[in-house]
Length: 382
Ligand SMILES: Cc1ncc(COP(=O)(O)O)c(C=O)c1O
Image (cartoon, rainbow, N blue to C red; front, side):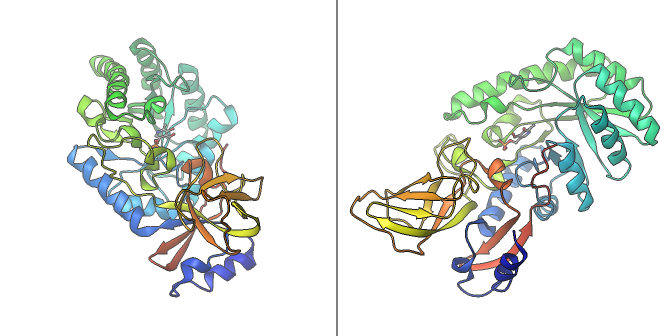
């Protein structure tokens, strides 16, 4: 974001009506909804007897990480090493790098980070990785805690069998600079199954495999105090399997269009509020039936459904992307026209990649812009 634009938005902080005067497009976080989501999930996770290690790949923001820690999170997951480096530089501790890396230069950086990031952990999946990481740690003179990553069905990362896990655990035990803390298994492929019952059954099948790996490790004398996994889509029932000790959910704080469209509760209730939207403005209105806004492909992730309009347009209107920089509001009434300057709030379709398009969260309460939070790990994809 340019400095003059940031200054313009900072100048209206706290003023009545300032929410409507934020320059557009802007990524807007409703603090009341964010806090409600956090309280809802934290209370549920506590009642389930589990810990929460939320995934920072979703928010990429040190201020949010601090809020989550203050609410009781035991740490934070990150998907990529550079996210860990960025958040660690802001003083965030207890980071788990949840994706393994075979890259030698990254293993050196991970070893270096271990010396300056208290509570750092990393996921590993092969014996070779373990050896290379141990060599890097020995060179750096640091130690690191590890989780073994188990492929519970997504097939993106992780080993598949208890035998493979025993081989990796044996290798970890051979290095004084490494300590095995447990296993991790994220069932990403089932998180957005629309039906609650079907998603629950699929998740339990995934967790059964994770439980087998944990049991084999414990039986062989390897410590396994942490079993980490779960996502927003499965957080209501993952505890039932008796396998996980902590949940890694990420999207729950925002509740995007994808999660808002699935059954998160068995009774059809909606436990989470949509807390994150892109605020955009009508910048051209030359045609009946539709208008051009200032938020397009560069303001919304394009891997998911269309954004949904939560405010600013008549019922039945829908949002289309209309090019890189622009969007289109299509009105249900083809004769109607939206006035120039009309403000729209569009719930983000998929939160993680949408967040990565912005430098800041514009945080609102009621009708006021109250804070602007930097997204420090924005663009950290390596
Ligand atoms: C390894 C891992 N854990 C947890 C999550 C969080 O999932 P969700 O955003 O569905 O809560 C993700 C998201 O992709 C992930 O990749």
